[in-house]
Image (cartoon, rainbow, N blue to C red; front, side):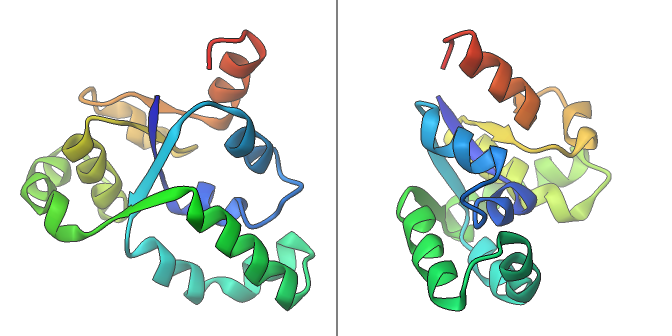
Length: 138
């Protein structure tokens, strides 16, 4: 299984005690995300640091561990899918995630329900992935 991570899922992985972190380390999947997501994490670092309850050093270690398990996709690799993705989504903030997914033929891991309104790629919520893991499907 291949999964494109959205911002909120990626940010939640900085908390090693989160359900998403458990799933991230437990499911058999290849993870991808648009490269810009790393700069988004920098913008929201203080919030993620607070929520993770990690020290600054612990947070940096966790960030490195997580990022080593994700393939970050440059916009040049998925730009031809941006227009198609934009036409399918009401939220422009999610266009890149759908475009990456289309470019690498992958599902998306997101809890944003509006992403499920398009029908080109499968979108899994955390709950759906946890259910699949518990049933031994992933």
